[in-house]
Image (cartoon, rainbow, N blue to C red; front, side, top):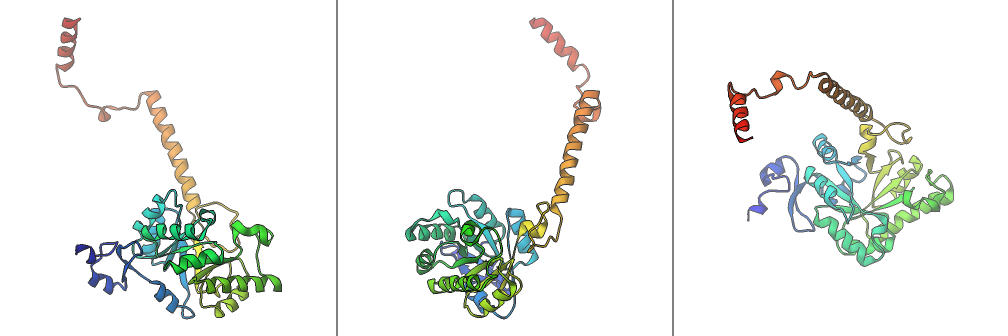
Length: 300
């Protein structure tokens, strides 16, 4: 069948192989090509640090893929899946996990259903803040699951608010135990947020999970940073663990100032009679208006 010949990006098998892409079939039954599979990523553990971002638009996703980012996460709303689907389409060859809402699943069955919904849209896995029980149910159903440990913002009331976690021996052991629970539940990776860098390095050596570090130093298997932070989409103050490689916020402010200036000039031209000028209008052929007025007067 023709659908077997190309991937989501329309790449023939031979060209895909030359570009180092793997042919895959998604859990939803669609053929595609990816830079990594779960197996490939697991084989990278301890060998090199991978890069990861979370784009918020199709333009950011396409740019991240063109730049060669290793993996992406995408926020996925089961009730409004259109943006996640569009981002998947914009970066068809990059391994992509859909980040599912914590409160979207209240039972193991709902966790599996949401996971399947994400996978049907082309996700290569899902990232969640679910309990090990929900993780185990989804993993048993064949869904690659990435968990979340350390500072989990939506659960931050349990760890004293939005602050670094793991700076005491009790907290450090708790973070390690949470990661081992996710490992036992069948997860393949874990996002580890805002813990001491040295602690993540030691934990990463002691788990089979790929550790995705955000604000937890360079000791993980994946270095994760939001596209908003990489591109400088928002103004200061910036989180300590981020770095801005571009200043899109300043550029957007300059663009907005240009928009305002353009509208003001348009208003001024209309009020002064400078717009429309002769070059902006259609000139009536000779005699048309006289003929028109004569006809109107006849009818009047």
